[in-house]
Image 1 (cartoon, rainbow, N blue to C red):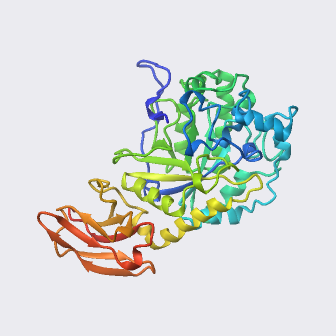
Image 2: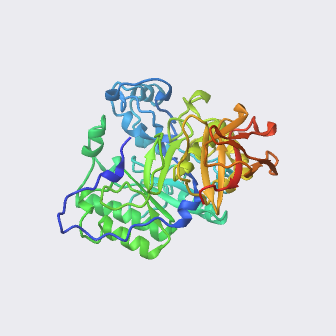
Image 3: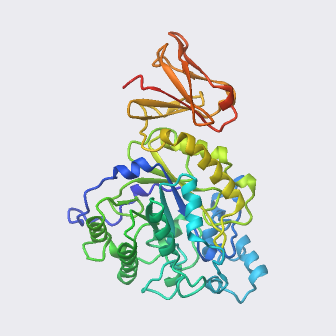
Length: 455
């Protein structure tokens, strides 16, 4: 996957536009856990090649795209599995945009939907307001190709925003800035090169994207602007509709706001890593994002073998936070607005663990290192306390290095929410040894709290 912060757009030399002062607010760094919501026309066919469990040659990746939300592109690649399935299910006379008439969000209860994300531990929620297909999920004045006028006939973003704020959590918007297949006429994207070649960069489209983003800001005051696949080059200069001016106005209106790194300009807030394992602490604030399966949009072909279990999701969160990141985990609802049972199960397990151990995640910062190589342990710290996360409690103990002194008081966060105390045993040659209580050995991650030995 690409590192978008390295893509900085046209070279203006010494005459580049002025961007706002960079920064990431503490509320975002403290939040640690957010939920993406990928929902759109692609949720009607709900299909992509579930490639996560088998190898696909790199040159065929777009033909066998694992992201169901890319259906609108993959279906145009003649001979692709998506193209073949579309003919079988919808016939040759139905194009992708016709699916708008089949989309009914009749099971969508925004209060219950948002409540399930908050119960799972979400401190911020970011729905897709417009994905690459160009179908807008809010009642926009810029195009009739939107959910208020077609398909669900509802302003879905307004409903999610209202309930997110009512639940006391932060609200952000995902927006596809430079890809919009509805107002473009290019061949299908079949490579990473095509990803940046087959897109509009003209002034007219830059103004169109700017008008939509300005509308989202004015209507929803989003705490986060999560742009994707850059911004049209025709809107990267000094113009009032260009991205520099847009960000200036956004942060003037919402001083606590934050943006990501996917604008294709030399300005970003937090950096993003998509479906990536990170080896060490990243010093800049960053965000790991992925689906609960191998797709963001709901893929009906995915089963348990493609889906993060509750235990795996908990361990992913701990790993990301120990490395200075936030986890933005994605939920892909069905077209009707219901959350698939496999996703619900993993979310419920995460929520239960967070209710007992959330203080060791929320508001924390990384320690001097993320963990100990080969010792199944990760660290977080807060207010002079160090939290030792045993990510394989079934081993029965955790080995720690020489920084951890003999006699240090240790408190295990119990399965029932109580704390179990022990004293650290240590030897100068072998380091320290923590014995995991029997009651915690079946949990996904067991957590012990002690005074930070390096504070």
